[in-house]
Length: 115
Length: 112
Image 1 (spheres, one colour):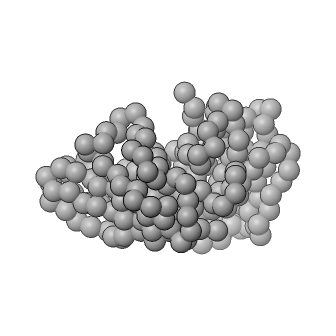
Image 2 (cartoon, helix red, strand yellow):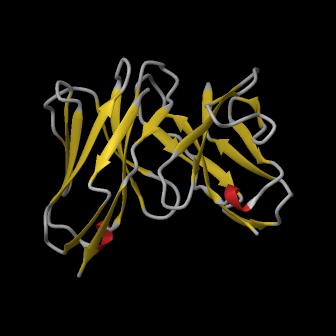
């Protein structure tokens, strides 16, 4: 199983500022995923982070708001830009297990509160 | 559009009760269905199901998939207060990228 270290664990930010969340995987993975979980809601995929190319964003999410970096096969960052209180959520990174069709593993999550 | 629907959305039981959580899915080129337990932030993996009719068990938890009727159930027997959590069902579809589509989750509260 993969181990994913995510930080920060939580943060309280002022509106209009930006926060960068980091995820480090203990093994090389082709793709990493960033999810958002708004209060009381389930997980929604923001984007798929590909190494060596631009991230692929889901409907309703744009690169200007959620820029993603993927400099190598073990690391990715997600930035939440120009934050508003509506961005208050848990943000989770994820990576597939080794081998096709295996379970996905998650980082510890970042609880973001925008005031 | 692919979707995963869970029911009930919330459930309150007493210790020792048995619960059944439901998950139905409509996913293009279905590959697998996964169950997770979420207590704080990070979901923890419970089961992955790919074949119909084969029950997976782990202690008091078990799960089974019906690919004909497009649903799965998660059973928890002899519930304990530590089982209180949100249980998430997710499905992986046609792409082999690992992208998951999540249901709304079932919030389970087990009272002493």
